[in-house]
Image 1 (cartoon, rainbow, N blue to C red):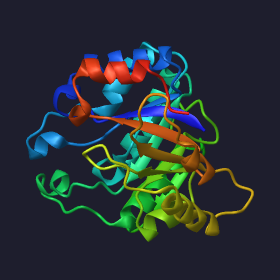
Image 2: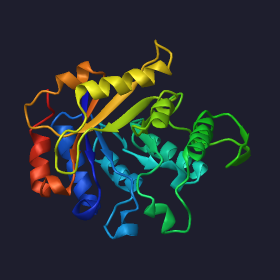
Image 3: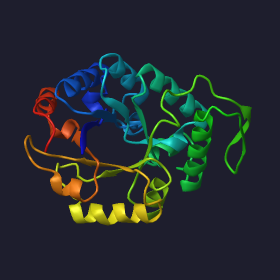
Length: 268
């Protein structure tokens, strides 16, 4: 298992310099990744940072840890723009990007700007367009929601054949979607810092994903959770998790307290 942190860049943590501090501390303490929330939380009254801007700043202050989103509401973006942004970020970071992808869990981030939250068909088509653009081939696509008329993206991401796409969500459709891509992200905790997903529950969902996936294909399984320094998360590794993402947000404490948790290192 590898270990990362998942930061809710909302409220006080929307200040970009604070995320950079957490990124530096995470790399120094031996964590393997830093992922961030991707929300337009200002639409419902809370400050929020742009994920790719703050991740770019974190990339310039680190050299090893993976960097990405957990997760991006893909349908809030034009697929060609998101493909371009992530490709540029992958090059800037030296090939360390991860795109966490989902429907988006806050409908108000769509409806506040005049559109309903799209369904899974839009997400699926958008991911196909993004992946096609990352291939380097000329893309010609005419679908129900998007059209690409003979476009070749340049420059491409450093990672080949593409930036890893980790799908978020625990609904049956999300599990089937995750089986098509490179990984799955699932929240295992609640806002009060309690684990709500048991190792057995995780194992059942991983088995469902693998039921729709070639048996020999690798799959990243990233579990978002909370732990105390020195505690063991081995039961989750045994259940199929390949990543533990320590959940850091304002309800867990001040910036200094979050830094202290990071410095204490990953669980084992």
